[in-house]
Amino acid sequence: MIRLLAFLIVVFALGLGFAWLADRPGDMVVTFNGYQYQVSLMVAAVAVVAVVAAVMIVWWLIKSLWNSPYTISRYFRVRRRDRGYQALSTGMIAAGAGDGALARKKTKEAAKLIRSDQEPLIHLLEAQASLLEGDHEGARQKFESMLDDPEMRLLGLRGLYLEAERLGDRNAARHYAGRAAAVAPQLAWAAESTLEELTARGDWDGALKLVDAQKSTRQIERDAANRRRAVLLTAKAQSLADSDPAAARTAAIEANRLQPDFAPAAVAAAAALFKQNDVRKGSRILEAAWRADPHPEIAELYTHARPGDAVLDRLNRAKKLQEMKKNHAESSMTVARAALDAQDFSTARREAEAAIRMDRREGAYLLLADIEEAETGDQGKVRQLLSKAVRAPRDPAWVADGVISERWAPVSPVTGRLDAFEWRAPMERLGQLIDSRDEPDAPAVAIEAPGRPERPVEVIDHAAPGDEATRKDAESREDHVTPVTAAAFAAVPADAEAVEPAEELARLPDDPGVDPDDEAEKSTRRFRLF
Image (cartoon, rainbow, N blue to C red; front, top):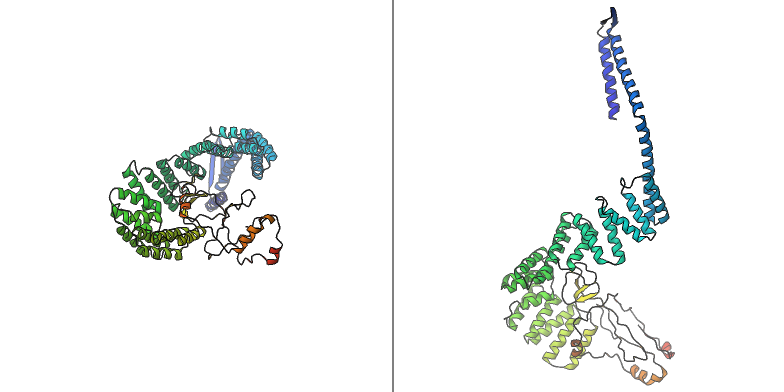
């Protein structure tokens, strides 16, 4: 478009010039070699323009002939390159579709038409073709050769990382990821793997630097970066609590500033302040975290902020927490525990029952059983409360990847994922029902879906003819729950809580039970009823 406008402007200028000369007649006389030539001014101008045009045309012809070999070779070179890129594109599509034979064919064709040092994608296509053919050793060699090329280094590290992951070599995978993260921290796969490695060996400062690099490159959002920093600073504070209390205090306070509602950070900051006798500031941190999300660890540390306090003082501090978060099960549980320690059984019982009404769970029934035993010593009521505790939903705990922990940890012990632990009720799992002649006394565990009213569970066992007397005796009894004593709970080891995650089992509504006609036609073969 610009060239067309320039051409039109030149033609317009020439027209104006010739029109100007036509309006001003004149002659031009040229004397050369004794001869005198006289022409009009218009003819002279036309002759000059014609000579200039002829010279330009002759110069273009000479230049074209001179450059014709290069022009011809460039034409064939461009045509060859286009064919090579077409083969490369077809090969990449074939590799993505999983056609290893076509990918290998197009790789050879592209390598013949394009030099591999001019187009690095040929190396990638060749490595992908080797992977599709199952030649992992050849693919690894190709990825290793990419490390020498600055443009292909990250691609080679990515390929070697994936191959190490496929072989299950976590150390090699993290090594390649660390090299890639050092060059390009914006790569998510490299940063995440390196972050897992740093947290696994407890290098919290290195992990914090990596998170800052991720934040600066906008790989993660600001809120996510603050959350990660809070988790890492809390872990650092916990690790330095005994060796360097000052550094632990600084890290914990920074973590609490980033995430005020993060209970582990608040507990770590308050504990560090309590060690330095700064009870007022530590209490304010715990109170702010309690208002955001009540947590039993916050309540435990808050009520025992001063070790020399009497039980009534701890009860008053528990009631202060309750005033900050009214009508909450955790507030009532906190007051009930403190009242039990203070021998205020009426208050303890009232608050424990209030907690059950707000959130029926195992810990509330166990606490109520302790209150009953301490106040009245009625073992019948204690056993009744313990049986309800067995069937009640479990208390919230720190859960990550199917592992239940008594204390918070920064990473998952299974996958190494950062900030994996969540404070929630563990998912219930139905114990395996064993019905075998070799183990006639094997217990059956029935789990009730959370939030449903208590209903007796009927277990029907069609015994063999030889066990007819036992069967009639069992049928004559109504719903019976095997009593669970406090000694049984105490015998459970503290570290025996880890279970694999399983889906919650909900009872089908409106179960009609067993038809009497079907019950009369009982089979002699034993079976299990779920």
